[in-house]
Length: 103
Image (cartoon, rainbow, N blue to C red):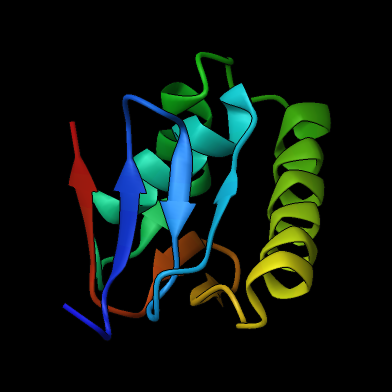
């Protein structure tokens, strides 16, 4: 689909609508896989940290914000599109576009 974000789990690659893609790090890959598995739903901070195999602490919770921020910048600079990850204030994050995971 032309309007769908695709995460290639075997190659740790995120492909934006239009076909431009980028290589993700391990933590970015885990984050995107978790968010795309529940497109349109809020994924809580605790759930995301579990996906990243880290217990939820205040420090790690702040680190999650840094990972999301850096990933947004990385996607925009390399794909020319904004990463459709919204903030659910006080709860977590949500992937607000169509997306799928290819294994």
